[in-house]
Image 1 (cartoon, rainbow, N blue to C red):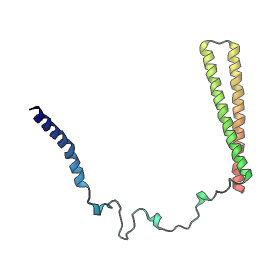
Image 2 (image 1 turned 120 degrees about the vertical axis):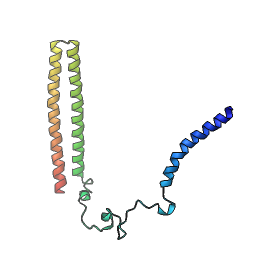
Image 3 (image 1 turned 180 degrees about the horizontal axis):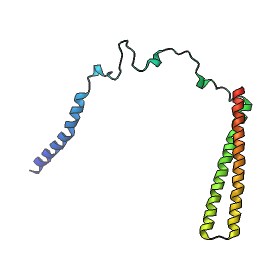
Image 4 (image 1 turned 60 degrees about the horizontal axis):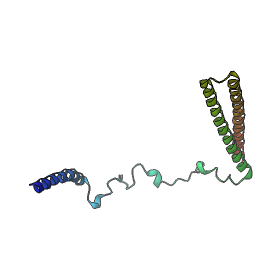
Length: 150
């Protein structure tokens, strides 16, 4: 009796798993008609893909600005921009740390002299950050000018 119950139960589970799959298989096309997703118009061309078939002799302006990395002046300008970015990033990190230190000192009840020193350090860091941002801006302007005149 126990074997009969097991057989019937396993047959029911198998049937439950197989029946939904058969309806999905019924919708599938046979092997010769598997290209139904290609929608052809009456000329045999794909709809919406005419750009692929047309010959386009226009200049590709996105790739016209290539080949300037070999010039030493422009390479140096790229280095200047990269260095200025790193300086700005480092200054922001330092300023963020100083703000955290000030908050921590205020929370812990530090002396007025220590809080003043923290505020003065933040002021100096902000001034240094502003100078480095100006340096970055000028380096970018110089690079842009050199790329234009090439």
